[in-house]
Length: 125
Length: 151
Image (cartoon, rainbow over all chains, first blue to last red; front, side):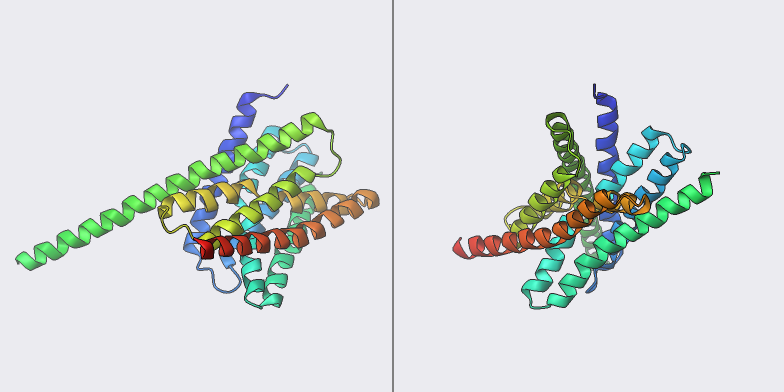
């Protein structure tokens, strides 16, 4: 049975995540490499790694963990990344597009792994 | 003096207009973010009820659909639609509908647990997300540009 309040809390967390992304991307000027986008995707991936690691050690309640995951899901975005990279590819800046999308995905996996390991190392004992 | 008053009034009015537009944009992004999150969570929950999936294909489908739609809307420009509404749908709805953090976590955890089987699947999922995401975004951009040219 799915708890309606749990779902609503997750939706709200996602909405606040989107708002935070808008704030960061408004403040940080994009430039060629879309630094604001890189920041939100990096921070969001790090946050889910830390939350999952903390949850694995039972240091963080599953309710809080799921809210962090929902916030990070709203904070990070895949569509803006692919469309920005695709625009570079369409302008024949193929390497910029390819490096951009690969660095976000691989970088996201690396920082999530680092967050997970760090949380377990710090909270596991 | 009159001209100074008029100048100040003009400045205040334009500042108020900017603030008003910004608040509208912020509200639109928040509401769009809520709806986008609700749609993503809804699809994931429904997929979980129908099928006890072992790899996150709902996230892949969501990301591909979102990439195509955003590419299409960016190319269409939609200059007749108010900026705050465009922002609400693109940055708010589609931004929150699609996600990168889920991919990061889904791939990172099997790597850290040395689960070779899931790792191969998740690595393929990440590579597939990159390639198919770009293909969908390009398809959306080209279709949107073609439609813009037609209208």
